[in-house]
Amino acid sequence: MTSPAVPPPSLTTLLDQLVPWPDDGTRPDAPVAVDATDRLLLAEAAPLVADAGPRGVVVVGDRFGALTLGALALGAAEVRTHHDTIDSETATLHNAARVQDTLADARGRIATSDDLGPALLDGARLVLLQLPKSLGELTEIAEAVARYAADDVTLLAGGRIKHMTRAMNDVLGDRFESVHATLARSKSRALVATTPRPEARSATPLYPARERLTDPELLAAATPTHDGAAPAEHVDVVAHGGAFAGAGLDHGTRFLLSTAGRWPAASRVGDAVDLGSGTGLLAVVLGRRYPDARVVGTDRSAAAVASTRATLAANGVPGTVTRSDVGADLPDASADLVLLNPPFHDRAAVSTDAAHRMFATAGRILRPGGELWCVFNTKLRYRGSLARAVGPTDHVAQDPRFTVTRSRKP
Image (cartoon, rainbow, N blue to C red; front, side, top):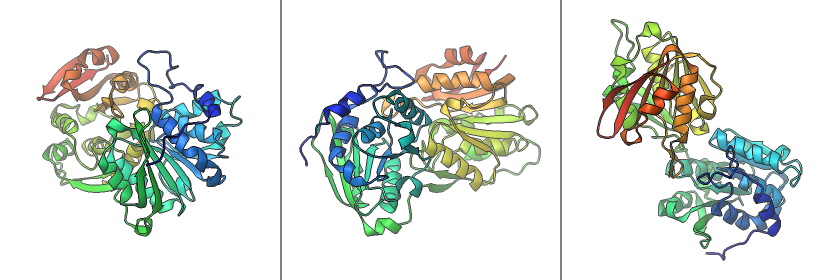
């Protein structure tokens, strides 16, 4: 272990200007724009930035721009970045504009990338990473760094100690010859990985993962509703490491699919939306059940969008896939049916903010008479919120964990 590092005073001054966009930082329960992990990673990175070269610094998983803008403040000429969520990417660019007077041309020195490919990582010598909660997501990131970055790359991966596990060390150790931990600082710690293993350069990647699913609820829901339609035999799923539920069928989605016999008739569905599409299984179901409908899948996550596109393609289902914050890019009154399994976590914290904003989106994009079918953890008691955001809401089904509701737009 190394001694705890301390960021330079000039960097602290810059970080103090950042806000947890879209919040302004004044709300008592708002997230913090710069956490202890950000500060630790930047302190560890400070002596490495100068030797990384003009395009040698890469940031993955920045929340509000602290790592990206901090690396620029430490002397990086340019920083390449990958944010899984579009709201984190937008927050980083918002804060870059906010510190323009302190950090010259900050916005112009940030190059964003939608994926973990060579455009992001080719030749990288220093990679800063806020550790994701998913081992699958960490595995895909580690695979990409080991495959594309420079031979002398240093990966600094930090997180809160209470969320870190030995398995994270193992994921990095499988792909790098040297992995060690820094001393803890303000309840955060960083893992330092160097020297990609030669075999990791050319190994077949574990992600995206591919599986063929034959779950009865999935196949029944994916069968066209017209008489004489041949039942679906299987549905293929493609899942990137950061996609919820991976290459399987989660309990909530399975329960929602079990109610498909009560969804609207095909004659009423010209446009259908999988809101928060994840791996795209619901988008595939919509495309197969309503073959004449136009299907849209949308998610804020780059991993989810890539998974949805790949899952649709694997099943030969046409559809449009967009990356946006809770479907903000979808036109008003453009859908007849929306399916939704909203998230109730933001990273490691329980949060219902996204769900409520998704309800508002559903209410906005549904045509009069259109329906939102939603599944959620029963304890969250969303029925009243759904009625206010969309319209009259019926309790359709409930099991020990989940509830399915149907909301109709007046």
